[in-house]
Amino acid sequence: MTGSDATSPAARLAAIRSRIAEAARAAGRAAGDVTLVAVSKTFGVDEIVPLIEAGQRIFGENRVQEATAKWPALKARFPDLELHLIGPLQTNKLDDALGLFDAFHTLDREKLALALVKARDRGLRLPRLFVQVNTGEEPQKAGIAPADTDGFLVRCRDDWALSIEGLMCIPPLDEEPALHFALLEKLARRNGLAKLSMGMSGDFEKAIAFGATHVRVGSALFGARS
Image (cartoon, rainbow, N blue to C red):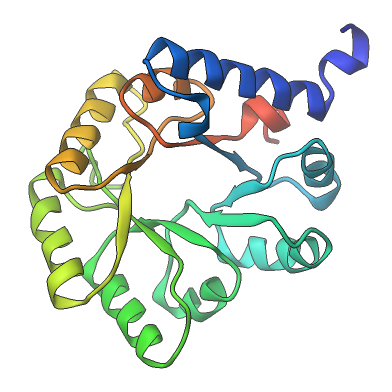
């Protein structure tokens, strides 16, 4: 494959899927155990559709407002798409998000958990939920501190009857991500959670080695963001 074919959306998607499969095999896992979330934030419909046509069905967006401008029409056109929220969620945007997203990877505080409970009590459908853990305890980053994760999960389950599927993290840029992936896996295993959202374009293979079930890949699929 040469020229423009080598950098086509279909070729990039095939290359990422091949790398995921190889990383899974190296970890003694099946390729099907790892879900590729194509991170389409900042990219327009014209850049997303070629990946859909190449077979990608699960996408991630960071902002509710941006997603609302792009995805209702795409979901109507391609009914089998899934959309995952992978960025922070303000509670005043919750109803809009519930109408659009199939999974939230960023349940990061009690206020949002309580807002989800109220929405459920009003009859709204809740998405699949991941708790975001601030594994690097960075003050500028959202997420539950590692030491508070067990207690927060107990409250989600016992006090609020929220079904939590897994944990999510974004390691600090200047630290070895494997340390954070290992910590997240330990927290998930201790709390009986099977799903781990971790790993991005630069480190998803390492995340798979530590048990990632969802990898969030953007630039390796879409190219550099402007």
